[in-house]
Image (cartoon, rainbow, N blue to C red; front, side):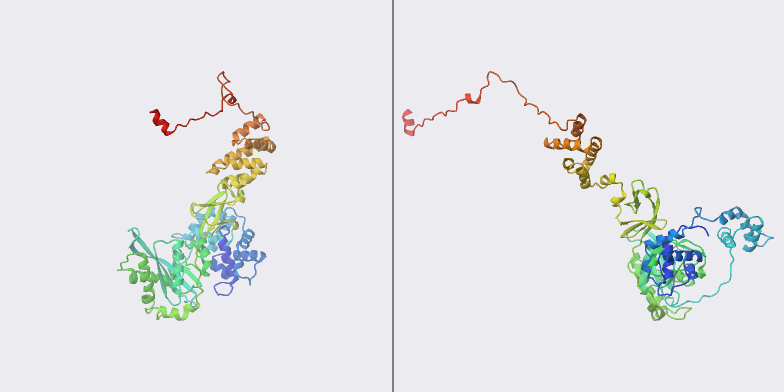
Length: 540
């Protein structure tokens, strides 16, 4: 099998199944391998590594935390940097010949894998049979079409088939555009009861929203979901080893159900939902006019319950709603809580000690600069993983926000990067009290962070001339009420930090002959003569 990097969700899913979920008994390794699309030996390695890390069969699923998964990932990670083993690489040189043997020609019938294995050995290419079979199936078109049989419907409340189907066009009321409407159709295998979720897109968020609406409609969760090879669900489609997306595995763990995808181009694997797509399109959608998607969704929900649910099904000869209510609904799993759709992506840590997730920045230690890390970001936390091991957790920030851990930054840069004025003043005060007071005076500004470089220059003078001399210079400058690092530097350069400067004389002229001492001026008051009103009239 081609080498795949160890996946956190894959390990979690295997261990969750091994402990037993969904009210079902704990399965064996072969069953777990079939459900997860893994090799049985791979499942065994995961389980053995978890057991060595302390996991026991009677433990609860809550013990499967990031620490346990990280320990399992480190224990089982193979050393195959090129992705495939040596046998696969050896077969690449014979790919053309194998393709011809598989296809055959007019005279030669297609050869079996056994025969091809023998012919390759004669040419010196000795590889395991299973590797050759996978190589021929994946790269050379090997495969045989066989007959089919009718599969039993299974137990009530266990299986539910889902698939997307195109319905038609709808005018979006928000912007007036004509948009394609798709239906995510859920069909209970046992009762044939269905639910239709309408959406404009086929993203993971749309699928999860449809699942949440379906569980509310049904009143519970089915133990096994059988989806088509939807891109939001299946990362790599394969009949034997399908790979699920990280987002879907995370949601499956939240909902508590298993996923058993249908094979590629194999509609017979999910015939119940394949037949329903055409039925929904013709019986519900065609001929209807809706003003909005919300209106269409409301009508679809009512239609599923009153029309599709009450019809006599052609195969079961019963009404799906009645069968579902009586036999399936009581057996469904409990409704899951609200699910916050996470963001899964790979990000690179930049030289500024930060990585960008959803247009927000998160700090990481210097050792991860230049490294690509896996990220899981939900509404509350952002988790960074390196090859399955959790390395950093941050609270989720909105777009444009930033979460910086001071411990991730170099100590000599942390204060400046975080604009930590208190830490900067404390660093100055550690060299001397007057240096700390001088730093406070410098930062006494409406925009103090714009003066931080000046304080860093003051610290540079401490490193150059010593704390004692700078302390003396700051003390003298404070006495003179002079706040200027340039003056401090000049004093230190001229070694005048301990000498009080001579104050300049007042600007003026020398005394002249017209100058008088204040004592020469008379201070005797002049008497006043009071003239009466009658004397004034006689004078007239």
